[in-house]
Image (cartoon, rainbow, N blue to C red; front, top):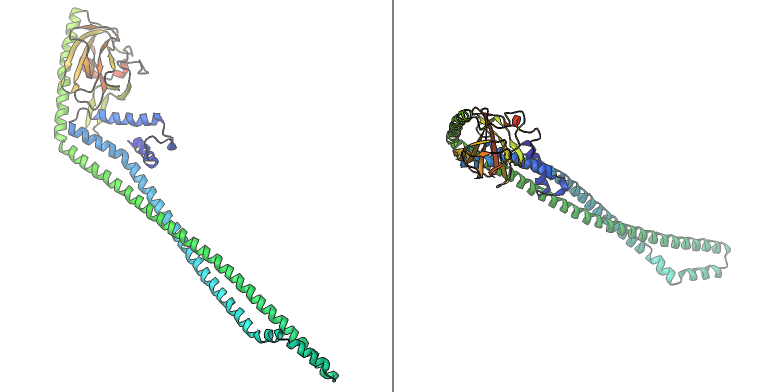
Length: 409
């Protein structure tokens, strides 16, 4: 079941069961189907309610790891998005503070320009009105050399003051223009930072919603699992009773096969060509979905014998006689559904269960590999497959030792 869980995790994140983005191969998907078929085979002797509960349990057990993984991923994305949003908010605050500082600097620069302009307004006005020329005329008209020298010194001072005033105003205006540009850039950066913060916050909210949905999916799966367990527990006694009935049917069949072996030995005409060692042919073109042997019930934890080997195949697929022999049973047999059993002599017989159609009759002799019926899902079966048994003196044994090692036709 763990393999199914991890594969479904990948498929859940991909958003589709066939997305090539995660490289899920057909063989991996086939493996999932095989494991689900194995679970179904383990429940073939259960009641309809228990089967449904078992399938529900199998599905929820398979999906829970993937759903929980999706929750972990979503929560990680929430944390990352929240950290990104917090950083974006800090950057937005810093950008806004830089903008305020730049605007303050621009305002101060503008005030400096105005102050410089007002401080030098009278000098510029006097210059505009020709005061400098009048002053020069006065100095040249003076007959006192010392007075002329003092006047020229004053004139030079005035000219120097004018130049300094012009430079001061020009510099103030340049600083104001730079401050204005800085403020404009800071404003753009602040707007961009705030937009990024808003986007990051929205992403965090989206991730949080995804995490909530993933968590809800997990809780739903858990709820389904609990409900399925409750149904299965309520039907536990009935399931055991039905299993006991199936075992009783198997014993009745064993007695019938033992009697048929005695009859065949007496008339000395029913012997087949194989009594083990891989001499049988594989009875159907399919893949082995369930082994012979004791196994733990997937719901109740009790051990039960699965008395044959199951081959998954489509409804209507041809069933072949594993070896030549005499048909000793052909008809309905409780949990086995449509059943055919063939005695091959030497106390060895084979049985073919859950058929959709039987093409031979009791007492008929069949050849090795002869077509004897069609695959179905009759009796206690959860899907089309062949339940194949090998019995020695009526007792069920592992069929694999009687079949080719490749289990292929």
